[in-house]
Image 1: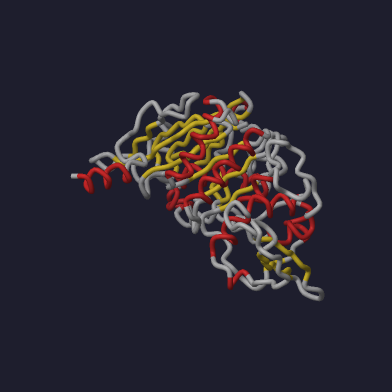
Image 2: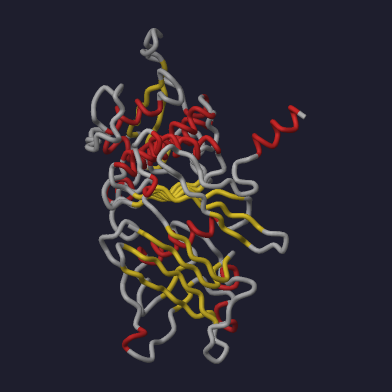
Length: 384
């Protein structure tokens, strides 16, 4: 598990250190560093997958997970001097399973202004050789999932990739391989009792996915089909068969159903696929969902943590926050399982991070200015 993240001269942060937990919830004002935090972890994984995250390579800024531009784009504008003859360093450090590892690259203005591979400085002694990443950790191990805010939209068909969905088990950063993942793995057993929905017809992945999706839209069912002779698969929705509604054989294209179900589908599958030692990073899981659906996804995410996974979630939703608080109150998680970070900018434009504590009753130790307080502010004005 990742227990701490530290950044130096990286994008929004000159210096920043954040503790992480089995469930870390990032919230705050726009352009205050929430995405930077997740992107730093994604950058490590991207560089690892490309085979450059060691003493011979560095950080690959553009790839499958993130597209950060060139060296000049990721260097903090008021960067800290490296203290070695004016050399400039960008560093990401992660404490994983009690061991801290630092990946430090040198920014060379003459070369890296337009480079998207930032290289590690040449070691001058054996102690400066950077350690390889731990292969079995959630960040660098199997089962890693990262779903960005710009997820797939309703479409007639989706890509069919054996490499991504079957061999690697990766849903894609936009969830674009989720439909093929479900098609290929629909009978995979959801083994953790914490994740099983009591209303599901079986413990199979597809039945469990449908059951959780019905928390958003009662009566919905899914069908993931192979389009023979093509490199595409098709998703369709049906309705009926629950709550006294007569079943129907009519199938509907995602384009005729709306954004909410398709946006939520990768989130549900990622959580159901989580387990011991697996890392899932989610951006804005609440997108296009009504409040009950947002709370449900938070509840499922907490159950994925209870099943042994680690989740890092960026959210602007008070319903997601309250779903986490209720999970603690209901003893799904303990307070030690959860870390909350709120990112804000002070009057000088500098980023500040507040970290309210959550107790066993789901109550918070503090409510920083702007921390999910807009409802109370609006209510005060209405009652004035």
